[in-house]
Image: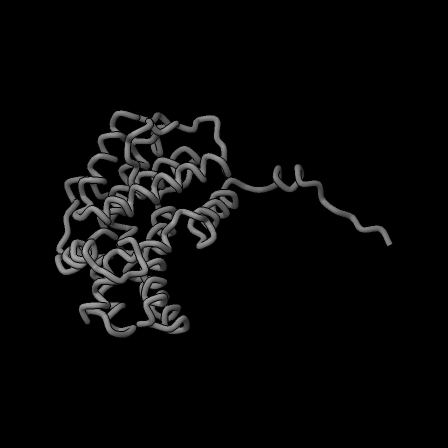
Length: 244
């Protein structure tokens, strides 16, 4: 029996830009894409130690606060602004403006560990996209300059002509999933409940993506004070699994 197969070149030719963009997002934000997110809990580990988080319900409330009032919302705005400055709308990147934005993104990390969290993941993400998805318009990031994770995502997304709204949605979903994964490793939530909690976050994630789509840097701000405090206190936590 003769088996017919379609050449890879023909398959690639028939792949639409929409399909490629969707595949990229699934790849970039897959748990298998090694940016090191598993090493960071965003202060959740300290919140578990202090008793602020004890089970799935309190973890879900904590994540809700981080998303709506803390780094989730701010990082989505930074991603959106990075996408625009990298030419997402005009096709022309403004490197000086992107560097300024990266500096702001690092400054928004209110603890040493939070700054490490975003800078380490940003550098890893950008390097991995460069090697796995090479592009003729790729911008080499200057040595010695920190690259926050959301800025890296916005920059890479613009270069690859990712549409902004789906990119924001995928980023926020991955952000929330990583926080839930930290709760699983800390044994405050089981895997089945974590999936249900993730699904219940859809309205919040969708609203945040819609807001960030048109938000400006003037809209940055936060009130996740307890979460920021846990991040600061985690720096002196003796026994820990995570780097933040």
